[in-house]
Length: 421
Image (cartoon, rainbow, N blue to C red; front, side):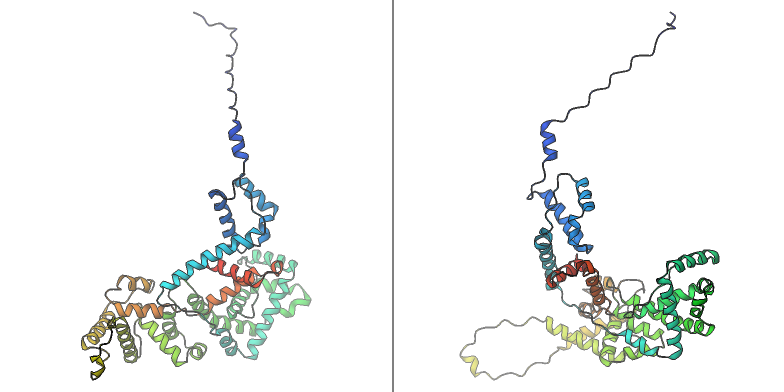
């Protein structure tokens, strides 16, 4: 059979009509979550966490962009009023977080707080020199001239491209942070050719170009401060043991700054104990005094662990007994056990410098029961005041010009939540 030549295209299949949404489903999608529902509570808690952790103003919840974003994510959720968060949600989150911290502290055997060790003043005193004052003063004026001029910033970027230098901006010194001075000087030295090219084209600014004497002084300052900056940065962490690093690092520096800073006998003794209890370093020098101190504290720890005899009701005859002399504070077998524990620790291989010493003490707590307690006591101490300074920085990020009317109790809550959530 021959196919028909005049056959037209096949009829298209009719598209199925879209399914109509039921009235129940439509009403369900349009009905907001009850304020007591789990989903509403979860979203509200997430917004509260966001406000506290990211230090956002409470007014964020009434901003049009934020409300549109929340509405897009879940149309059934209705944001509570602005007053709900500072009066109900944030206080509730604060009490919950504080309760958790209190439970953790209750179970902690040792804890340490930070204080300001004034390394900034030590560095300032060590750098009192007319040549340094002149070089640093020119450096500050130079950076300031670029900070307040968009035209010079643009010219600096062009010069960096022409000279194939890193496209970095200049850094400004912060008066209360000596490390920022080193960062400012280092950046000026890195960009000195681009800076000279920009300033040389302006007669009014040519005097800001550092002379070769100024450049030599800045290079010497940078060479001197750079190791100290790296040293303090390494010691400023809150995530790992830091106090036991101080004495080993002091041996690497012949700087009078650090010797002056840590010359106090009590500080030296504390640093010696912390270094001895760090399996990465153990005993470096003055072995006998440190061993004697370790044995003394271990013996005291043993006596504290010894269970006291239960008190019994006195009989009439007990009043006529002759009081016996107190027995020696430390039985011979306990002294021998303490000495053996210390010698075993000192004879074991040193831990790699990149390892966490707390892991070793956790794994060998039964092998070294008394030393592990001393390790908790000394290695928990932070080496610097950076943690406390970060708290003040957090407060500065919260109390801004747009949030200058916050009440003191609200500031306390917000700082606490930002640092502990």
